Length: 209
Image 1 (cartoon, rainbow, N blue to C red):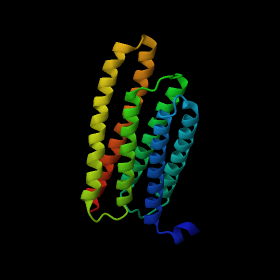
Image 2: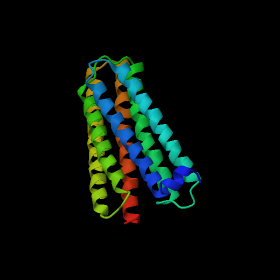
Image 3: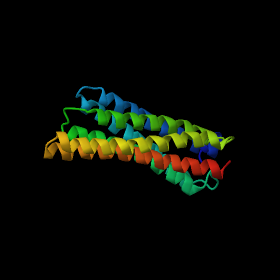
Image 4: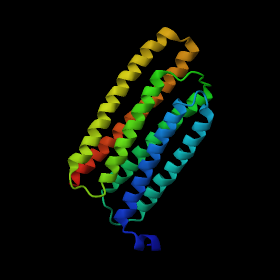
């Protein structure tokens, strides 16, 4: 065991890493909204989001390394690994969506992309607050309320995707339909990944309260 582990209790190390990872997810969601407001400067923000995705990978790797060398953990090992992987998945899909926008040379960011980005951002903020609460679960309903809201936001995203796809076939040509539909779906999948994290946090709250 290294000096850092002697100084900081192992429980705190895991919770600190999760706090850091959730904060990176929130920051990426804000950069995504900046991209939506950038009036075409997609490349700059996609680079920033890619850097955040790399940072998320590093933190996730730290969590796995810590898990592999820890005999006692504050949660079940599978809970820790699933939570880390699912938070990282959100970053992956935010990054993938923005890279597609850049590669496809999207000139017009429409209202559906903006709405999906807002739903991702709102979900990320809720998840960050819920992650902070697993450090000391005194009232599982505090976490549960955050998770229920993320589930609601994901349902809204499903509706947005359905309407966006419906309108797409009325207004775009074949090539643009493929591009826009791909981006819509990746943004919506990011909300699915947020819901996955919410479900994991909800289970953790119940098991450890």
